Length: 181
Figure (cartoon, rainbow, N blue to C red):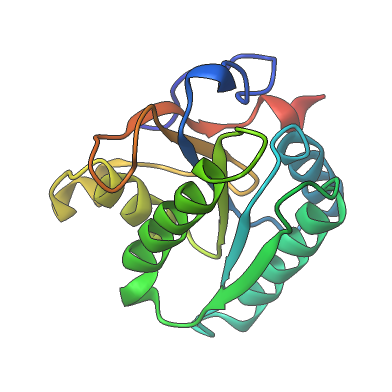
């Protein structure tokens, strides 16, 4: 699987029926692609921005940090302030992302203005992106090898109810339409 739902518009529509979302971005070294990723994610008010920096490839970790910095700079301050964190242990990535989504949902559901909880994870490798997607969808780990990602690609996973107790749905996988504008 390399892509799903490559709509030319951004994938952040239909929020009125949405409880939470997880946006997975595969970091890119190309500065214009980083700008395109930031512009895409600016359509979504983020609660949390996680950057994976395991140090397995120093250049890849720097690309993840640069991409995350551009995303953070493109966010409009909202009622809920953007929380940033780095994940240094790739083994705990899935649990950290799930906890961030659940925590953001809890905070969002008690806020005065009801808005979908949104967490963005910027990963430094295609393996990490595949692991997040297959783990969130509760697929076997063997599915990781069947999923392809491209630098700058965006994957959006959504929950219509509490993410701690309901299944996720994939809105798009490795969307790259924003990179071609």
